[in-house]
Structure formats: C-alpha cells, structure tokens
Image (cartoon, rainbow, N blue to C red; front, side, top):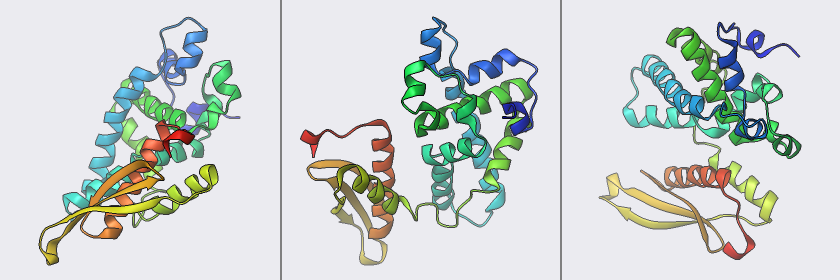
Amino acid sequence: MPPIEEVIGYSFRDKDLLRTALTHKSYAAEQSSADCNERLEFLGDSVLGLAVARYLYGEHPGRDEGHLSKLKSFLVSRQNLAAWARSINLGEHLLLGVGEAQTGGKKRTSILANSLEALLAAVYLDGGMAEAERLVLGWLSSSEPEEPEADHKSRLQEMIQKKHHRTPEYEIIRSEGPEHDKNFTINVRLGRKVLGMGSGKNKKEAQQAAARNALDYLEHNELGKDEI
C-alpha cells in the first residue's frame, strides 16, 4: 500500500503533524497521549467549507445563494466526505484503538469523514491554503452532482429497511404562503420517533431536506426498540 503522502500528492515537512491527523482518539487514549486528530478536524471543517464555497462561487456564477447552499451542504456532508476518504483508502492509514479497529472503525462513515477533515487541516497548516484547495479540487472534480439532494430519500429508506425492516413515513407539519409561493415543512418518522424535519418550496424538496436531516441524526444516534 503506498503511503498517504504519495496518494494525495503532498509531502509533509512536519511528519508529526501528519501522524496527528491520522490518529483517532481511541488510539491516543490507549497510548496515554493527548495527540489525536480532533482539533485538526475542527480546523479542517472550516478549511473545507471555504474551499468548497470558493469553488462553487466561481463555477456557478448564475446560481443563487439557495442553490449554492444546497450544493455545498451535499459536498461537505459526512456521507460525501467518507466517500472521498474511501477513494484514497484513508481508513487503512488511520491509527485506531484496538476496540475501534476490531469493530470496523476503518470503514465507519463518521471516522472517515472526520479524519479527512483532519488531514485537510494538516495540509493547510503545513503547506498553506493553496495546497489544501488543490486537494479539495481533486476530490470535487469527480463528485459534484446535478441534483445534490436527489437520493436522500432512497438512501434513508434503504438504511431503515435494512436495520428495522420498516419504511419511514413523511408528514406535512405546515404549509405557509400564497399558492404561487408556498413553503412546506415536513417531518419524517419511524413509528413514534421523529428522525428529521425539513422545509422547501414544494413537498418533494421538503421531504428531501427532512430525509437529509434524518440521515445526519442516524449517523450519530442508534434507535432503541422502545423509541419506535
């Protein structure tokens, strides 16, 4: 397996910074070390946001803020970051605690997404914004969608059916405004549990927003049988 520097096309001057970016908190805890990638992840989130915003602003001069925000939301989502991480085989380069590694941490969406942000921050600190943007642009070139929200509903349904053998339900909470300019608010639930809520100019857009929020919720929370 080639080293991660070779994969991303960047050679670190500060190798310790790279090691920190690849160190999950579970490994740091086992080694009784304070050096893990959480602080870098915090910085990388902002570096990524700026790089993606600049890219979208330049590439879509005719688009309004709403459309650009939707594109940006998709591109910086946990699912998309994890996909980028998998494309460079980042999981295999991470330092994980024994328990985390044994339970599939190298493939876990949240760990991959967070570690990618940490790696990006490390590149930024070591080589500057130009190098960080070069890295992001390489990932963006193969992932920008025509309709960034088109598959949130299907992804949510697949996830829930696989885990719970049930189908999520959508409910209109309210609709506001005149007929030609309505705004819908919809929630998505599984049984009694509301998983997410979203708004949009039509029912389809609101459902997609609700599904996206539900996916974000489920990424960080497990549903108990007593909740649904």
